[in-house]
Length: 487
Image (cartoon, rainbow, N blue to C red; front, side, top):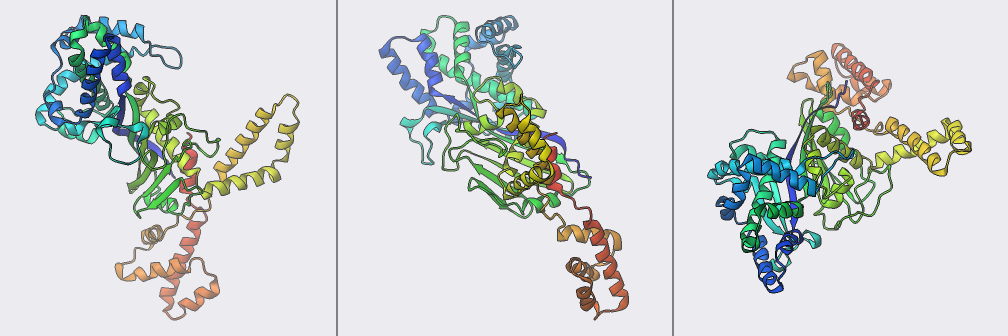
């Protein structure tokens, strides 16, 4: 039985963008003089330009004025309450996250952790920073005058290898986010120090203005397939064909990679109408969504790589919201992101399109009463009628989809025969012969086998019968996985 049971989903890479406009927003809060602003603008440009210097990261020290606030419990708690009241971050039920109270606490912890971790001289591999121009990126090398943001990246692999912590990915992401805020706030403070009268006031305006935005994410999800082999799933995936030039499918024999390039449209499941993206997309393939499916034995792994605010918005439902950092810490949510991406990818295949056509035929032939009911009920609006039929159509698609794929690979058939007949390596030809003759009629089988001994003929005929019996209950692995993506 195929399970598709979720085991674990980790964040391997997290990318944040911090725009220059937000840095300047902090500057304008404390400096009003135009001539001074011109000089500070030069300092901010230099900050962005040199942000990738790993020596600056290694030698980083939190300014004493900021540290005097962070190191005292009472000051941290009071400041957190002040900022949470000033900029209230809430969930869908209007409950406060106490976002800044937690952030300030994490910033203090991050300052202590970093003092220890930087001794390895490898923190630039865990937390990397570089200048970037994402809004007009065209694949060309960036030049200094066009930089208008900082791209910050977290590597979970490096974090586990080069730090003193054996924490999970949630702890690593929290450390990275808190340290990034601390690092940039400290840089800003050093630039603006002559114009700051109250450190608490500075921290309030800088933390609420910075607005680090998630622009990229790499997830690794692992699932148990029960008694179904990974190669069965990969063999079915290898038969898929894209029905749009936006989807690229690459078969690497032991893995399958699907890449969706938005090219001006949102990354949307075929069930829904594609919309114009809320954020910039491009045609260069730099901002896309990809998944790589691989694994071993009965354990499937799906690596999901998401780049660009438009794709983040399509998958997550929101983008550039601060409460996203809270939802990212929930493993079930990370699992749901992987499932959403995989189902959307699969919907852009010819096989999905065929299942959709088949569903429409079934509705017309087998469910005429449903159509009459939906069309004739007086209180049904056009919208509700269409929704009713769409739900019915999608239910049928889920029943039919991917059942035209063959999962009975040669390796799987050999495994089945060897498990029952236990022939030695010199009898492998029997397996191959049986597999080749499985789909043939009896006259062809008799003709092929007439030249060998009766005992060998009997063995091969038993093998053919075993294969035919097994094929009566096809695996339909991808069909079952697709349906379980919505559990």
